[in-house]
Picture 1 (cartoon, helix red, strand yellow):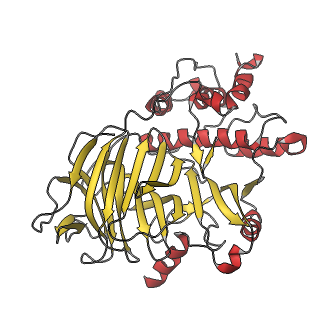
Picture 2: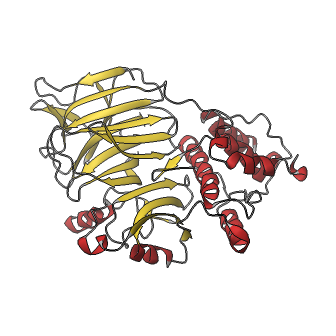
Picture 3: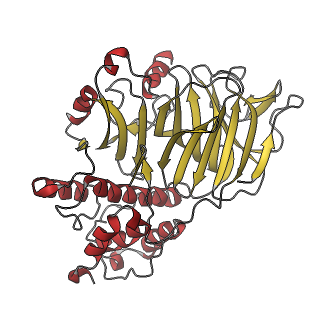
Amino acid sequence: MTRRLAIAALLFLALATSAEAQDPVALRFYIVPKAGTGAITDPIRPKYILEVGAINSLSAMNYGLEDTFLLGVVVTNAQHTTLASNLDVIAIPQDIDSAIGLTALQTVKDKLEGLNIPSDWVTVNHTYRQAIGIVGRAFLYMQRFNGRQLRKFFETGIALDTRVNQLTQAQRDAMNDAAVSLGLSTATITGPMTLRQALRIILEQLPSFSLAGQTF
Amino acid sequence: MATLGTDTFNRADENPVAGWTLHRGQTAVVSNMAQRGSGGSSNNECVSVFIATWPADQWSEAEIGATPAFGEWPGPAVRMTTIAPQFSKGYIAIPNNSNDTVTLYDFDTGSFTLLGAQGAALSAADLLYLKSVGTDITIQINGATLLSLSNGTYASGDAGMFIYALSDVASGKVNAWRGGDHSADWAPSAGALSVSGIAAALRYAINMPDEL
């Protein structure tokens, strides 16, 4: 038990050590899988956060019950290298106000689609801040969906290209309930729409949100 | 920012604490402070909410009763709901003085999901404040903002306190508690995305001919 608590102590962050303090720190954003059992000694948390050593500041958004966190964390270069070296970590460029550009465009779209987040709005001129903005809004909606429905939105057989009228009435009601609970309107969503379209209508209405001191 | 509830726990020892609804475990008053009481649950945590009518946008502030040792984590809780004895979920903020951090969790019936953490060391008499307004969550210490982030999981619930203690005679203590209403601070509004510049992108996408 003592050892487990000691391990947990690492998670609850600590002031950077003197050695780490010599390495410049920067706020960076990542999309990472979940880890942990949920016990207070092993909380559900962004995966690999224990492995990078002591850090000062962490903000995370869980993607409802999906196996994903959006993470904003102040890290050293060495910690960033450790995090980004994992194949299941999406490391977002440090300058989040830079344009995505042609080279990275398809990669960004593929990553968004991999998260079941509509990506066809993204162009070369959009910034990574805007991309994080749409990811975070999707996460906020899915958090509320999970909070009220206690289950995943993207259940087996449901994908972005599923049409609203292919959902069961209970599934449509659940989608509507989560939106209304956030003060959003679903009045313009119609049966023939895909979830890709319907989710964009919902996410567009969400106000700006904050993560790690940044507004998106 | 009206205050809807206060409790200084300055009264004779009692277990459970009067004036509160127990969600999980048992909260007691011992030596004029709230702490984990015996009974109620085999777990080390207790969650209690102050009996009042709580708006969705609310705040909760716990005055730390003793410098919390490792494994002794008292703090405020907001938007706590329960559906049955021992079931409790909502947002909690707790200090961990073993490494000088304050941590925000989504707590769901014994399951903890890490939402945020920031370096800070708390001592007795420090005020740890947690506010949920819309989807915005803010932690303050002695009136200064420590951490702000967004989370949409819980829409409403009651304000109260969370205490985790490995022992029911330990340092996870709350000397006084206050909670209140913050409903005037936040109003969801369509089009707010335009502030962040994303509206233009979304409008572009939504207006694509094949999607009309």
